[in-house]
Amino acid sequence: MKNRVALVTGASRGIGAAIAAALARAGVHVLTPSRTEMDLAVPESIERYVDTIEGPIDILVNNAGINFLAGIDELDSATLNATLQINLVAPLQLTRLVAERMKANRFGRIVNLSSIWSIVSKERRMAYAASKSAINGVTRTLALELGPHGILVNAIAPGYVNTELTRQNNSAEQIQAISDTIPLQRLAEPAEIAEMVAFLCSGKNSYMTGQVLVVDGGYVCR
Ligand SMILES: NC(=O)c1ccc[n+]([C@@H]2O[C@H](COP(=O)([O-])OP(=O)(O)OC[C@H]3O[C@@H](n4cnc5c(N)ncnc54)[C@H](OP(=O)(O)O)[C@@H]3O)[C@@H](O)[C@H]2O)c1
Image (cartoon, rainbow, N blue to C red; front, side, top):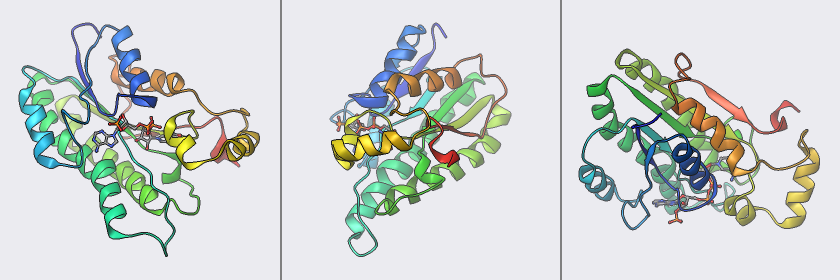
């Protein structure tokens, strides 16, 4: 993967930081814009940031995501719109901008961070589940459109990962109770998700595209 260039969103912490580190270990030059440099809530900011990158972008990891809990009676349009913007519309915009450069090189790897809540669900995850279910569909459609250009598009659907996002939405007691229901009896560490992403981004993945890979310690098998 030496001499490849990757753009990873949401790399300030959690899974994104682990993905950036895994790609860097594999010799990739990794671009990790902060929210100040590229705010995914603001389409103009996304366009401006991509314009500042000179040369090819070989790998795009749409990792940044938000998950504010709200049931059907609580969900307001601001929360719904923000969730769809950050988790779905921004990744689409970035893909459109970056795919042009990948096409020119006839090489590209795109990985979208989905979630098990795109496959099963849990109360008060409506906006999040909608955005992640949609990204699965987008992943499959893009695989069809971009495959002829040598661009492979996949999604990873993690279960519970030990990050701030999980701790924001679950108390320590809830996390312990959740761990007991996971066949592997623990949450994933961000590095374990990052290893899968790094494989999908590498030349070693030469034939898998359009797939949603569940990495959840067996949680959805129940
Ligand atoms: N944690 C889990 O259990 C889990 C499970 C399944 C799927 N996922 C998915 O995996 C991805 C990463 O999750 P995580 O747990 O690592 O999340 P996290 O710890 O909450 O980190 C989220 C990242 O997204 C960035 N971000 C949020 N809003 C942004 C915006 N408007 N513009 C630019 N960056 C923004 C944050 O940047 P700032 O530092 O600026 O806030 C941060 O770097 C997400 O897509 C999430 O849905 C996570």
